[in-house]
Length: 458
Image (cartoon, rainbow, N blue to C red; front, side):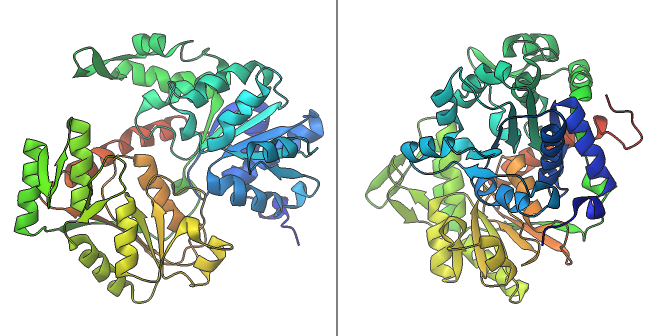
C-alpha cells in the first residue's frame, strides 16, 4: 500500500515543492530528515504532468542511488507511474541499462563522470538532480569540469543538500554556476574571488587561502537568495535533544614521546621500520593515525603497527554504558576497522552488510555498525539506536553533521548521544575545534536565505 502524500505531507514540504517546481533551477537546502527526496519527486511529478519532461537523472551517493531513491519512488501514491533504472555494473552493463525507457535514471557520483563522457554533447536528460550536492563543490574537479558542459542541454537542475557551506561560502560558486552559468556569482572562480573575497593567509610562497570579505559574504548570500530554498529542522520538527560529548583520552607516556618526536622531527622508527613525513600534511595525517592507535608503515598503506589501545578502551566504556543499545561508529582509517572488529567481534562494516542494512539495524541485529567518516549520508538509522561515536577527529563539518543526523531524525524517541574520542596532547582537539568553527557560517547562510510559507514565490 503506497502512502498518500497529500494527506501526510507537512506544509513546509508542499511549499518547498512549489518553489522547486516554479524556479526550475535551484538550490534546495533542507536539513537532514526533513524530506528533501519526496519534495523533489513531487516537483518531478508536476513537471511531468504540466511541462512534459522526457527523462530525469538523479546523481546521488552510493547508498542514495541504490536504496534511498528507489525506496522513496516505491513509497508514494503519486510516483506509482514512475519507472526507474539503477545505473550500476560494468561500463557495458551500464550502456545496456541506458537503453531502458524509464522515467528516472539513478547513478552514483562515482560513475557520473563516466556518464558525462559517454554522452558528451548528446545529453538526453532535461532534468538533473544532484543529491548531496556538496559532491560538486570543487571547481577544479573533473566531475565539475564535465558537468558544466551539459548545462545548456538541461532545462531543470536541482542541487539538494542539508549542508551547503561546510567549508564556508566559497563552496557555493561551483554548484551555483551549474544553475545559472555564472549569472549571480561570476562566470569564473577567479572573478568570483576578485569580486567577493580577499586573501586570508599565505599557504605557499605563491598560493593564498581565500575567503569572503564581510561585505562579500552578505553579497553572496543576497545573490543566491532568489534561487535558494532553505528549511531548518528547528522551525518544523521537535526531536529529542542531541548531546555532544568530547571524551579526552590520555595516551601512555611512551606513546606521547613517540608522538612528540613524529610531530616535531617528522620522523620516527617503529621496530626496524623508519617512518618519515615529508611535509606538514603528511605529518598531520601520521599524527592522526597515531592518535587513533596504529601507524601505516609503507606508502601504499598495506602494513601497519599497533601503537596503543587507549581509544579502544574508551570505546568499550561507551558500549558498556549503552547497555545493549546498538552503537554507530565513524572511523577514519582501515586500521581502525581491523582493530575495532578484533575488540568487538559483533561489529559490522556497513558496506559488508548482506541485505537491507537499515532494517537489520532497526531490528537490533547489528550491535555495532562501522561507517566511514567520509561517507555517512543517506541512511535512516533513527529506529535502531541513539549512540554514535567518532573514533577520531575530522576537519569535515559535512561528515560531522551527516553522522549526527543518521540517528537524530523523525521517529527517534531517545536522546541522541554523540561522542568524539580525542587524544589529549595531540593534534586532535585542534582539528575538532577547527571543524566546529565552520558551523556558524553555514547556519547564517541557511537562516538568511530561509523561505517562509508567507513569502511570495517567484
